Amino acid sequence: MTADILVKNGMVMDGTGRPSFRADVIIEGDRIKDVGLFPDAEAAHEIDAQGLVVAPGLIDVHTHLGFFLPSKRHPEVLKSWIYQGVTTVVAGNCGYSSAPINHDCEDIINKYWSFALPRDGLKYEWTTMGNYFDYL
Image (cartoon, rainbow, N blue to C red; front, side, top):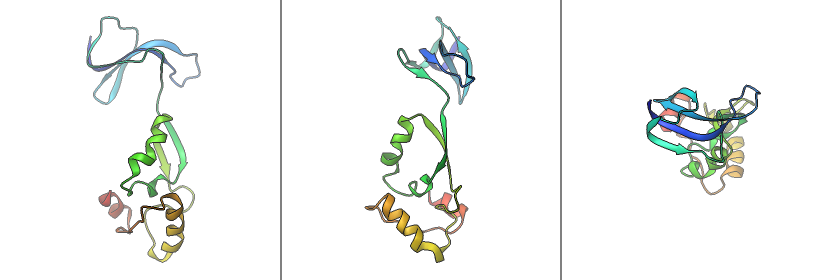
């Protein structure tokens, strides 16, 4: 069996609630193709997960990370989420977010932004969600 990526020798925690188990994970393209023991499997890229846990990415359901994305320092700031296993974030769910921007409310947004990333400064070069995504 050949694959794009083979994650081997890991302890898989699949999110179903059952106990973890030792397994290999075969990935083709952007999909998990199979999970099991594949001693003869080959892949273009192999990851030895011996002593590590292989698990689905976590979802952080309440963040304000949309404010960090326009910053040139966002890779530095967001690194801690990746290290914790977060692969998906939900932003803007508490009433205000980085887009769309109502320019009449910039003072309140600037206060939050200055607290979060005081060295960066933020120029709101967008108004709509589409403008924001184009900016990013």
